Image (cartoon, rainbow, N blue to C red; front, top):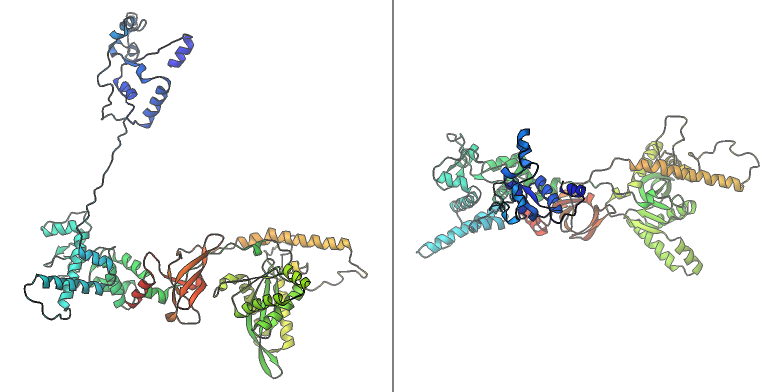
Length: 634
């Protein structure tokens, strides 16, 4: 308003003085060291951005012309008021103007618009050092703890005695009971100090006490026990009035572990029953479940490996290759019995699959050695072309085959052959051992081939020629399977199959009268065939890739594996009791940042295993390999 008035008067004003009869407003304007509410703070900022706080003066309410209209005045009295000419002191020297109140520079602390900044200080009083509590924290086994405390109590009694110590005898049962009571008193005094203090002075517990429902009392040994209603029963005193123990304490954990081991590592209910006969632990069921989940012995017997989430599809699965079988996955399956003369011999089948088009090529192998595999691989490359990359399981025949291939290439002396093999060099990638889920691309097709062969052969032993024929026919069936959704609408295109990329049509058989007599290959026909191939690849990217991307994925495992974790290595060839233990020394995150393969150090050396073959026992936070072994012994 002051800016608008000065602008409309068109006068050059050197100093503008603002008058108010509100001492509160003056307090706010001059109290720059205070913090106010958001609304008041914003208004004060707007005012002080235009004018200085020194331009504000105090005027008594009786001499403030603005106060006349805010309070109301009659018209005949308005003519004789100061509304038209202002206060009379303005005609005098500034030294005679009304003085400001003496408390103008200070805002009352009880002002509601002030934001009071409070500073809270928490004082935590550390309890005096208790040697028993330190022992409970450092020792992990209950019987060891009780014996150590009993030895300490015996030593203290000997030091206090004036008699010479006699022969050291075996620790008696009474000494063990006294040691256990000593541990209970230390834990109860630390966790239930308020309740122990009131009961010691024969005062009732407060209604909001966490132990009020248990009706606790102090026995003659100073142990806090459950009251209950079983005093007249024939149960032992420990069962009628068990000592009260906190839930998340080391002594409670040791007692649960001991009861769990005494019950033969049974379930939650049996362990709870055993613990209840010795002590009353608050929130017992929750604590027992938590302890049993970390039991090394139970995890070795009934633990299961985690389910690894699906990884990103590799480039060889989702990028358009130069040709079919450019990136190939392969594996063996069998054996099958074949009749040769009057005897039966074993035959295996090596499956080659294109990782992009999912086309299949089957080769019969006469053995599982490297030579037989190399012969099958040469037959495959002669008919399907040399692949750029091969992926297989970590089988000994594949490893030897890869080594032989590379050594054979090195032995070639002819420079032209070396240059050709270098340009056609085959990259070989091995999946981790004992990880069939890494070869899901061909494991699924092996299952389809096995079912087809079982249906055709029907358990019969056929000859060599018939077996070869059946294998090739099964190959044709697999290559004619649909890769995309089969539509019920006759106007839609036929579903995409691997044969579209191999033969240009869904089925291997050629319809009659497809070519006219005298038809020859021309450039136009070749261009037409290329257009058909490009059309198939566009359908592959448009229909097949979204289809495999929409498959339901496995949820991410809640259990995380890190370096230093103690694990149990699953060996499907041996019973669970002899599976080796090891420690993870290196992890291999995938492109999505998730770990699916790790290196494990065990008694057999360093093994590379997938997470689906590992059971986590302990982590570096809860214990090392030595601690896990101690738990197993306990």
